[in-house]
Image (cartoon, rainbow, N blue to C red):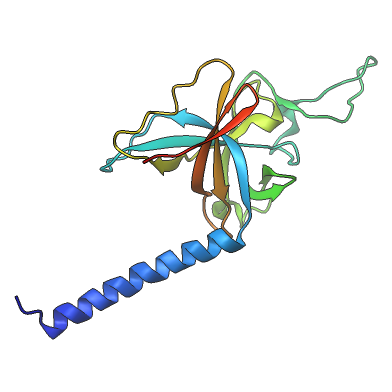
Length: 193
């Protein structure tokens, strides 16, 4: 079988494109912040081939304000005055807001984007009714691909939590690196072969 010059040129162009994307992701993995955060299993609905987990990342919204203070309940002292501390969402309805993500003190933080012109560039954060501010989550799930015959780590027993390490690129959603299982305080990285 003989390859034509056009076929070879097309192959080289495709290899260059894939190599550029790979180099970009490797560079970001080396230079961008990494953080471990809790993850919750999410029902996948993507029409993709292969086996993957669709996970919602837990983010800390305590360093952020909300679009409306009426959506939050604040801790109060014995006299009814508001005191500093983590707030919670009122039980009435969920809160959704666009946010920038950043890493501080090994926590993934969500900061509400107040500038209306920048709101489309942020990621959507959801705060379920009654949730404490440290238990908000990203509305868009992160997909983590696993081997076909690997055990499903989302079937958790009492006392277990699923954690995921992610890279936080300058733009776009976090990129998954690896999973770990926290079992009653014991940390166990999960390897999928």
